[in-house]
Image (tube, rainbow, N blue to C red; front, side, top):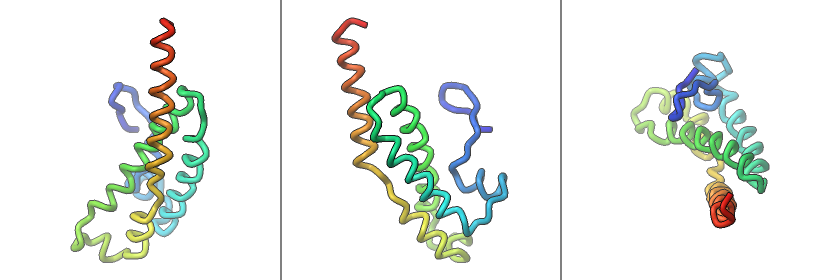
Length: 119
C-alpha cells in the first residue's frame, strides 16, 4: 500500500519494486507488463469524460514514474549491468506524452466551461 498526495492509500501496481519484488512477477515479464499498461492508457486517455480522464492520467503519472525509475539508473548500476535487455525495454516504453497532454487539455477545457457556466 502506498499513501497518495491526498492522504488515501492505494495498491501501487505499476512500479518495478511493487510488481517484481513484492508481488513476485518474473523480472523478465516486467517490460511486457508495462506495454500492457501502455495499451490500456492509450485507449483510456482518449475518452472525453473528465472524471474518467483524471483516473487514467493518475495511472499515467504512476506509469511515467515507473519508467523514470529505470531511466535514472546510472550506467554502473548493478541491475542495469546485469539486466541490459530489461533495462532497454523499460526505458523504450511508450511515453504517450502527446496523448496525455491532450487529455489534460480536455479536462481543463471542460472545467473552464463548467466554471463559466456557474456550476
